[in-house]
Length: 164
Picture 1 (cartoon, rainbow, N blue to C red):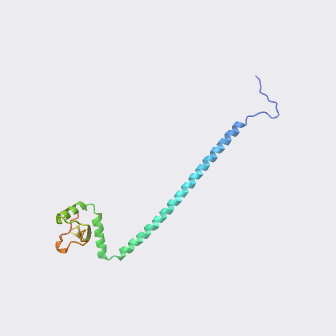
Picture 2: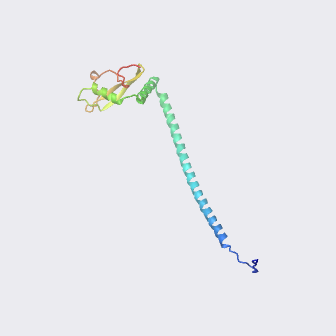
Picture 3: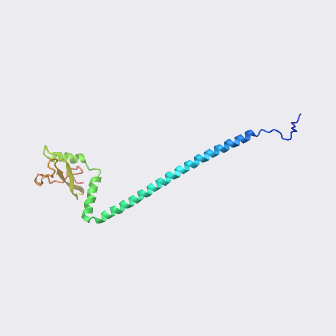
């Protein structure tokens, strides 16, 4: 058995490989740290922008709610009931515009065209919402004369007079 013996005062050691690996690991860590920091900064900027948008929208909602409350308090009880009935009429899922137009075609004379329909007199009748309509002719720009009107209320539910 022979022993490896190096009698040099500065023996040769390969230190390049460990230093190379250490430098590569350090550079990779630095690049990863830079990318993570950049991503964090971008995410924080987006979060701040989103938070300011949310705050702005909440202020808008508060202002609109105050405005709606002011309008609600300004309405008389009769106007509030009328408004509620009008909203109910529009919001009802069973409101049939097709039925309304079919009824109008049946009630109006042959050559008459309607350019605008104004809903008036919205009220509840026999657990149904009923509305009177003012029809405007396109050429004259006036509503149909009272003697030409059919004074029956429009059945918006398409029930043809049935009661529930």
